[in-house]
Structures are given as structure tokens and as C-alpha cells.
Amino acid sequence: FRATFTFIFKLKLLNILVDTGSSNFAVAGVPDPDVTSYFNTELSSTYKSQGIEVTVKYSQGSWTGVLGTDVITIPKGIDGSYTINIATILESENFFLPGVKWHGILGLAYDTLAKPSSSVETFFDSLVRQAKIPNIFSLQMCGAGLPVSGSGTNGGSLVLGGIEPSLYKGNIWYTPIKEEWYYQVEILKLEVGGQNLELDCREYNADKAIVDSGTTLLRLPQKVFTAVVQAIARTSLIQEFSSGFWSGSQLACWDKTERPWSLFPKLSIYMRDENSSRSFRISILPQLYIQPILGIGENLQCYRFGISSSTNALVIGATVMEGFYVIFDRAQRRVGFAVSPCAEVDGSPVSEIEGPFTTTDVASNCVSSITFHEPVLWIASYALMSLCGIILLILIILLLIPPRCQHRYTDNDVVNDESSLVRHRWK
Image 1 (cartoon, rainbow, N blue to C red):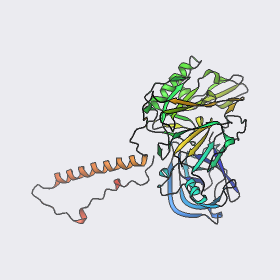
Image 2: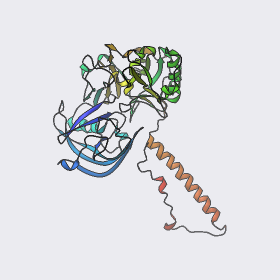
Image 3: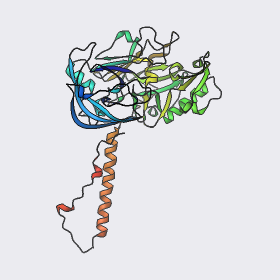
Image 4: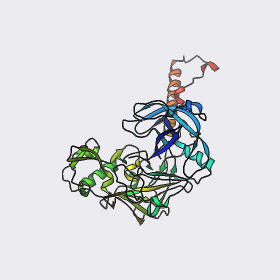
């Protein structure tokens, strides 16, 4: 259900997960039971190791590898060869999973999120600098659960340096990027079945709202998630439904002749327009969030709930993105949405965009004016811990020193508190 991009490494095809929620380009560098191919750096005459170990953790899974550089060419549209940073994955945990069809990850977020530091130039920044392409890319995700129709491309498309008109229908609506780390946007309100959840708009942006192709589901802050589930349960035509379905621990199954989507309401997300006094809404029909997962025998088809709770963000993941052609216009600091032609089931669209709407019913700013990145939070917490430790140490020393004894400090008395040195402590 995630977009992949294919690279050629020394006559081997590697499918790469396109992730707008991270910033490192990394591929399997050693054999792994769950990948069919890997990049053998010893066979590359252009690969150069930087000898720098890097670890990247995601909301699910992590990997550790070594940074290097190599020369790439892009078969379509961008001529020439370009040197880019690439990490070879040597160890991983819950990253390469059974049945996955990708062998690495292409992080397309800003260099702020690059590991081990923002000095590691991202793949796309390297292309923009060396190939002189516009600082914009766009993504069409066509999920495996959605049959391709119209001019859509099975598996989706990644366009580097521009916009492809054949990949969308109607108008493109843009919302400002609030901060350049993730693609952070501002959510104004949510509607279920046309009914406003009536939550404070800051609840939708706690502590951030991002557009992330590397996240499979639509993830909502806990309070928002609870309100959405209650609204769907109240609006749906199902009187009694297992709580395990909403939490993701159980599947719901219907006869294959049935179409359960008619039982569920439409979900709409309002975003602020570039004109701050206006908004627009992107809507997904149940075909996108009630997802077919498993067939049982000849008669049953089982579905999962494509929405989950989150502790630290509202994440517009693949569940929503599969309905749209999404433009990441970094040059003008905005994210655009247009209806995707491949977002159709049985010939009917499963996504919509409508606007403009007035923003008089919401706050002028739904995003906290103080946004701390995760690394900054770790540094601040360690600094506070170190300060408390030093104060406590001084108090203990003062208690132990005899009251009439004076001590002249020397260089040997300096305390080096290594706990204040934060080394690659990431979320």
C-alpha cells in the first residue's frame, strides 16, 4: 500500500519505498531473509564509504548501516550522472518484513530529519543542486487494493522536479507548509458523514500534522481518533461492532457478494488554503479506509480499519494519499492536492476535493507557535537532567566538606558529566 520507486544497482533492480516522512536514502547492503536483492558495494566501482555509522528509527522498525556515496543515473527525464549519499543497511529490526516487495527507502523530507545530522545532504537536495531541477516533486499512490482505471499507473508514480498533468483531475489545492522538517501542514477540522467533530482545531495539530507516504494508515491524535470512531459508529448502518475492529486487533468479514462500504460514512479533512481566510477539504470514501485484507475460503472477504491512533501526530498516510495526486512544492513552501484518476472502485471515484470555504469558524492559527523537534526535546531534557545532577553533586560535596576546611580547586577537580552529551538519540 506504499509507493515504491525502482533503482538499478549493477544490473539488479531494487524497489525503494518512497517516504516523505524521513530524509535518508538507504538500501539493503547485506543478504536478509525478507529481501530478494541487496546492493553489494564491492561490485560498484563508484561507491565510496564514508565510514560513518547511522541508525534510523521509525514509528515502526529501525535499521543501522554505514553512510557512503555513489553515482546514480535516472532513466527518464533527468539526464546525467549525480553523486548522492546512500546508506547501506547492515542490520535491521522490524524494517524488512515478510512479503515486502521493497529493498530500501528513499527519504524525501527535509535535511533537518537526516541522520546522523542535517549535514547529510538528502537525495532530492542533491538532485536539485546538481541537475538544476525545480525544487518540487509529486507523488501518485495507486494502492494494491484499488483497481487501476483511467490514466492511472499501477503502483503509482514519482515525478522529480515537476508536475505531470495526466496524473490528476480537476484543480490543485495548496496548503502552506508550516515548518520544514516533516511536511507539516495545518488541519482546521474533520467531518464524518458531513458532521463536524466540533473539536478545538489545535487538537488536530497536536503536536503536529504531517503528510507522510511512508505511513500506511491515517493516524489521528488519541482524542481525535476517539471522536472519529464514535462518529463513524454513530453514523454507520452497523448497530453493534466489535471494538477490536476499531483498534486494529480484529478484521471484519462479509460475504464476497456484499460491498460493506455502503455501510460507512465519508471522512473529510479541512486544510487552510494559501489565502489564510479560506480553506478546502479533501474527502475519502469508505473504500479507502475500510480496506480488503484477507479472503477466507470462497465466500468471505475480510477488511481492516485504515485509521489508527497516534501519540504524537496527525499523519496523512497512504490511506488518504491513495486518493490524491500530492505535490510537494518545496520552492513555494506548500503541499498541493488534486484528485487522482486511479482512485476509483467499480468506475466510481473514492476521493473528492471541494472548496473554497471560509475560515471564520476556526482559530486564526491552529498550530502551536512553539514546535520542538524531537532531537531538540532530547537535548533540552538531557540538559535539564545534567543541570539537576550538577546541583545535586554540589550540594552533596558541600555537605561532606568540613565546615572549617577550605579547598582550592585544581584541574583534577573538574567533573565531566557525559550524560549531557547527546549522541544520536532519536525518536
